[in-house]
Length: 276
Length: 292
Image 1 (cartoon, rainbow over the protein chains, first blue to last red):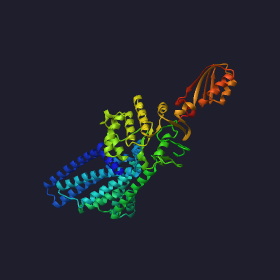
Image 2: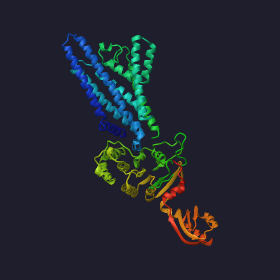
Image 3: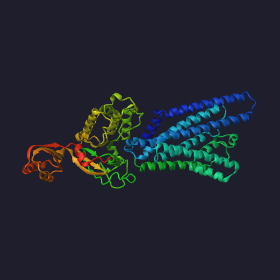
Image 4: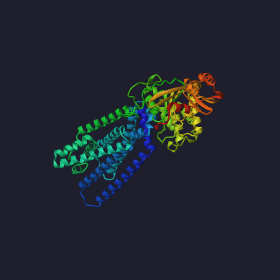
């Protein structure tokens, strides 16, 4: 019961503090720009002699770029909006009035986590759905497996969220944010290195990329999402965040799920054990 | 323990049900840490504590405990009514009861004119009032108040005093931590003094006059031997020509002291017992400011 109350209050907090609305407004701006871009590109194609097959591939690539931007926005928004919720309330003492209520501390943490999961779900749903819809109605293209892709992007957000919560039980807001964004940076770099290793067939470089993905599997999840959604041609683009040179396996997605559960478990354990 | 520093040690407290208990000590004495341990916010490295018959920190027993933290802060985007509803629901109070109780509590703490304002627009004193209300929303049996009058003006302090007494009259126990000794003195039934995490002494404030008394004496022919001889009954005795100020731990010793003075040849013109204020008692118990 306590966890659901905390989830509700966390979601309401986002709405009242205008975090969610601001993020959605920024997202609407993105969708507007993306839609205009697609519209103009489609118009230019109509007035040109570019073959329909190539048109389709270019618009598909644009759609993937749009979805990649949504992915980045969603992960960063999830991290930034949630980074203060545990660390900040411990520092300010706000947590004292809550942690003395008749509920175990795990309910506080899981409740807040659920609130942010719901927020990330709304954000990803609207932004991802909006981008897919624009690609379909304006550009006339559809991602291969949009539901799988959307769920994987959502999973990536939840992984980042759980890591943010874990560090939030140890460190201050600023430190937690810096560490989490640093890990996301490592994952981003690791993803590119792994792609490059596929191009040059360098096993040592691939190992660096894999280790990076094991340290923080967020980018690997995105690359799997891209693989699920992309058209064959845009997937064959080399050195891009959605090329299919090196495709994370289903085992890596399983690893990301376990990683998320462990991060959340550590967060719960440390939050229960620490002094407030 | 906080690193190498021992925050609380050998702290033994017994608080009777239905009393207002004052918890006193200088800064850094371990008061807030002790309260945190009793509420389960901090874990002791050793020892045990029982609150309302259950181990300290027991989740279920918290249903019967209210807490106003020092420098109360909460989600500033809430209105006071929303704040109370949230805390009430977390304590398991039904919506029907909250619908009755919340407006009454808001009125009790004087926030009715601000009922639709968000907490972010509240002054420190108004936040304290809201915090006090949240500590009482579930009608707890035991209420911990950590510096409840912090940031309040004199009228606000009187309101807090009245509320605390009303809670005691309702049958609740109030555990009060405050630096404002005059507030403690007129509110509490019993006080305990702690320093460096240890209990130094405790006082039943209703029986205080029977325990610690300061006496102002005006007399002639006060010999040094007479002043020294007062040590048998007095904690301290300071003479300045015809003025003598002495403190004794019990009012019952006063006749003996007077007999001794007269028997020593002093001509006593005035012998006036003074009630020792809590501040004087605090200073006499804690000693000089040690810069905590």
